Length: 399
Image 1 (cartoon, rainbow, N blue to C red):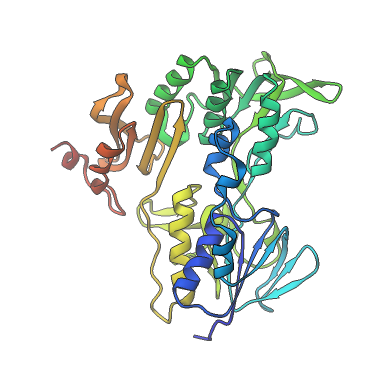
Image 2 (cartoon, helix red, strand yellow):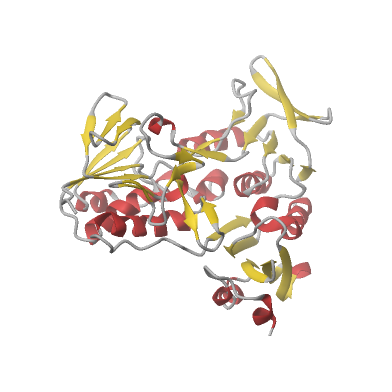
């Protein structure tokens, strides 16, 4: 295997930073360049919709590493630089300023871009939430005490609605799904999340799409639902999901689909790997491809990618994690291990859903595929052993 003297990491968030650190720990001493589209040094994203938006944490506390830590990595750190092209044959990454970075190894960790509505984003008061600057701008508007409509009830939308309600604002949460978090934890647990929001005074409009946004003098005033109802709004947060940031790879020959299509070792092409939200790879537990938008996966996949990028012939290891994600809303900490495929059946095995302190297991085709803990972190740990690449039959969990 040719020696690697120059490695470029495109993406300077959790996955990119962890990759760079892991490469140094694994003994890479060559030139290590990390490219970040934002001017800010690497920071953590989960607090944005919660503590930062609520004003409980200052922006500087979200940084993942101090300046001294970054200096020790001996990085050629290119912040405020956007990658615009890749030439695998020439082994170069082109930046927006025209610079070309040569590489022997490349890691793509560009993450996500927020999905937008096909209308309304030209109106003042309409927001997406992806970056720290997005969170600070949104917080400034929330402080005026407006009527808030959150479109999208996944993790980001539900957390944003909870934070806005915690600030005492008038909040409506809208989604085409039957419950909040339906895709993430299923409709049974999603129904409990719906109850949590209702108990805190959030109005829910589930099973409803958005057909338009109206405004006056260039500022949003209403959200128009697909049933004709109109929701007054001073601030609208669009949280309808994200798309992998792969536009700069168009025409490169790198296989693209729902993200960067990799093999089981997270390799997309010779010398080119992907990590974090942008990576799509085959997982033996599902029998198909997966792409995980989880903070924990960004770190664990980056560690695997660093090792595989430096591995010798036949030494690369397939990446097959048990997914883990969480959300904090009001006084609820909801954690989930494994998978929640469509049609999976949830069953409470510990605690009481009525008391909002329980563990539930998810069964699909006779096997345990997921475990959810609601304010039950310690109890949930006892059920992780039932999960893995080959999930155990539910009978073993009940025994």
